[in-house]
Image 1 (cartoon, rainbow, N blue to C red):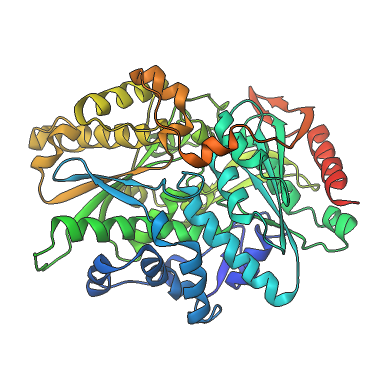
Image 2: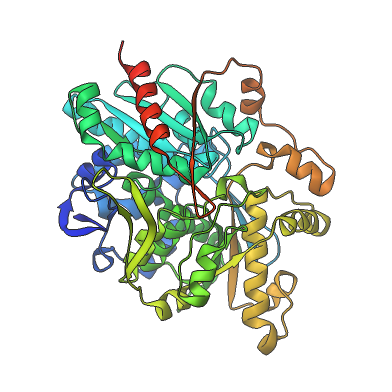
Length: 506
């Protein structure tokens, strides 16, 4: 299968090339699969998943993209190693029609583990075959950093450099990056996630610097959801959730047509949401994709007005979703036949973010996707309401997914079906809903205590890291301010390169 750059569709690459390059050079595009080339799974293939493991379902979903580039037996080995049974997501029944998929059983208790573990293993697989080494450049808003760090720790062909917004992630999230040592290097940045993301993107396309430092202009690659190796595995979640719900709820039913689902996804950089869009295109019967965001409401406003206006990033209890300009929005707009890019000068510096020079098919996008912005106060209200009604503790990100689904149900069905949101959803027996829970509540003890007066039980892995020594590289330069938003400054970029020289030049 061929993939192309969203900024240059004439540039065609294999999966290996896309993985090793990270972001398309020199056009700064994201690698994407053509909608017409997305493989389809039929009714029987989807039903057969109900008795399969996560690794087996991952093979069913990913093999059409990767085989024969990765031989079938090699891909199975990679997936079995990435997804042992003990880290499989748990499906929790809330009502007859409503479920939560807990994507929190991995080593860093975040949904990012599932894509990062695949990414790390398949990257090391290709590098080992070619006797090469790569520096993985990553920006994180919270959970990506820990998941990537754990997935890449100790791999002999990979070093990881992770930029995170200083003081804007939780201590527990930070320690999942900073206590590992070895080949994992965490860099604290004075700025928000968008600054970290701009820094990572610019480094990825700086061939001259890579050649100066390593003698290899292709040394850098990405582990963010801008990486195709992170994006594709995120199409597995909804298939897995669907298979287990089918198995539990409809065990003895013979289907003439598959029942449909509403998938509600807390969204920051839009990788998990776009993975679900791809799953729908592959044939999973998803009637609606609900995209929940926090107070960074650029996307729901875009769906409402057709105008994309990036505003200063707002702080939120759902810290990993404090993103005002999601990278994967460019891919989503491409999927619906539009084009978005960041305007840059001849040095690669961003002049204007989020330029849309070809509008996507808005009617089709709105038919498939509903998006809602959840206020900071609604985070806490939702955590309390869910705990009071169901004795379930949601983390702040899961609370966004829950509340967004509730808003969709109220708006979509209230008039004609006399619905009042999630508590009445069970009366609508023709479909069911699945909320993505993307992080263990214990990663956010202060937020949970504020909402319900309870500190959730701390997982063993987090306990172990609490007292370990941290290794942090500090990027002290300040971000620039443009129209009230933080943007990457030239002094930050220069300092970041000096930090990398200190780390890698012995």
